[in-house]
Length: 227
Image (cartoon, rainbow, N blue to C red):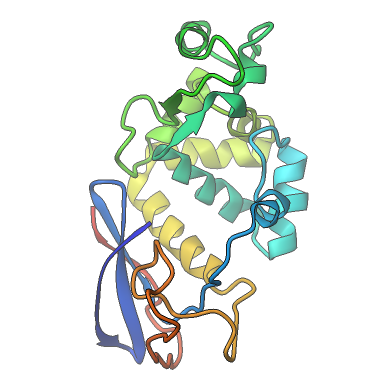
């Protein structure tokens, strides 16, 4: 997410607006302390890989962060924006095409990625790659989810019902996405003098000092500000 700007207090909570893709701005609480060092292994240990099964998604990666199965399916919709390297889905197109992948879509991916290490990228949503929308959920029944983990949302009956629901109701999905993002912001927060409150959420602060922000309560924690 790209921070757009910070704006005034409402309900006792300082807000900041974060832009996702080209057309959507989310309003989320400001003041979370972020780390100043990124470690690759931490990401591998805490984020689900593109090869995760439905069981692994629900039990291993989301439940241990106190996120529900519903929230897992909601947050998967973030794959509506962004790009992926070939290595994250190559096993689905070579040496044989995954049965859960649309043949025409697979042919396009194979042309783009003749080898696992091909330095090319492709949109995770081939239709609306720069817009945070519910098109991700519409692609899944067409077998056009890029990752194996995307297709797994259709394996579990409860997850698949949510896929169908969000494909039909973008407004509901967007609001629930904001709520889930705000909840994620409360996971394993740093306190005291650990980390820093970033001026720009994409990068560490230019100096060692952080803005002093005190949050009181969490009313009206998040909303879709624009779309």
